Length: 248
Ligand code: NAD
Image (cartoon, protein in one colour):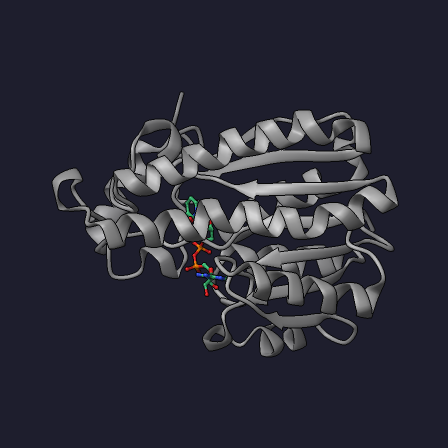
């Protein structure tokens, strides 16, 4: 039970095939009480119910400061503390540089980058009062080597921005006992890549990855549990690559 007595809030955690829900499930298995924050259409209450009793689903768009603050207040009202924040909500748009519109740019940066800032801002006061906390930011291998199939250059920029934001927060908040780390997933089989790759292309990609396969959501969930738990007590400002060796 690596997360006994801890409360973990996961943004974008309601998609049952996604990284966020896999993380929610593994954290719950490790004893955490979990708050899933997601858009109304994604039905976070239903996702939280799938985890069993004692968890909470809250509706908020991470792009909306008032909604995020309201959702965090609901979580604090129910559980009295927040030990872990996983900034997981994100959207992709496969685009070439010349095709990115202003609206595309705003949408992608708003969810990944502004969303990471707003959710972090909303939980930091509670973590400061507690004198402890772990913030985990889900970036992407796209930040390190370009978007490829998954996202356009604006997605890579947003995810690279997340890494900078996380490191700056890590330095700023270390004295308050709050650790901030990032994960850069490689290509993981979730709804975000659905329809973007046929089986042949997936097999080609798997062959090009040193560990010989695409990632599973549980691969990212395991990294999140490590960074959320006291096993990583001396890690802050770290970027953990979970990509099957794509960058070797
Ligand atoms: P997903 O589409 O299954 O999950 C994204 C979740 O974010 C959904 O539940 C969606 O409802 C939610 N969301 C979208 N906009 C939101 C908003 N404004 N407010 C709150 N929630 C919102 O995709 P996934 O693959 O599970 O992706 C999770 C994270 O991992 C994303 O940040 C993604 O960029 C990142 N990532 C995924 C991969 C991959 O290969 N799947 C690789 C690298 C990084």
